[in-house]
Length: 267
Image (cartoon, rainbow, N blue to C red; front, side, top):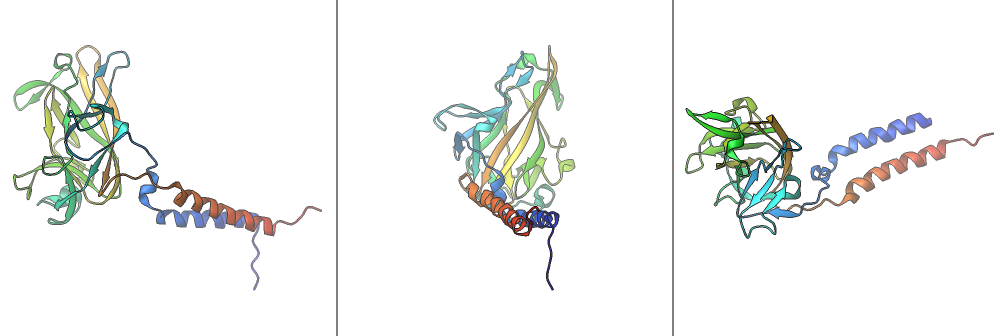
């Protein structure tokens, strides 16, 4: 039995092959980005950055202690944190990360789990911002909310007991936002800074979108979002474009060649 393919069928077949092949491509291949600095060790904070009254926005970024990076301050998109420390997931990890207690996960956020990354609103002038109730004490504040995330696994930000075996407070969770203290929001008193455990379940490239917001005494509600990148399991390497590009070109070429073979000359 012979098969006959019209041009439309050939294009449909090519498209079907393309869709079937895409899931097999490396997941990190989506991250075709470059960064000025790969942050592996030492103390730093993700910060709201300073407030610009002209644009009525924050300038979110990274702030590094002296000697850690070539510059002290980087915009959010210009640096990436590298997470390689592994540890058994604490009790409560199923709610936070969707894994059972004792599962090996990747962590950061302390001197023993580098990089020692925290949160801060220290670039802001406290007198410019409306106070928030911190347990009966009203302090000027800014809020850092996890508004979206992507990556090969799950992510959570939390505190544990001293030994790290039991989860205490859940701040962010890609699995259970409703189980966090403030629905994936973090209130930061100005100019305080805080540290938590950053937990990831799988190796690979992650992007966390954090929206910084606060109520300015003069300008009212202010909100600015930024994406912070993390590479879990080792240094970030820009994926070779040939893996994806050549695959797509090859499939397109097969379809085009088949189309040419089947096309009849005009008479």
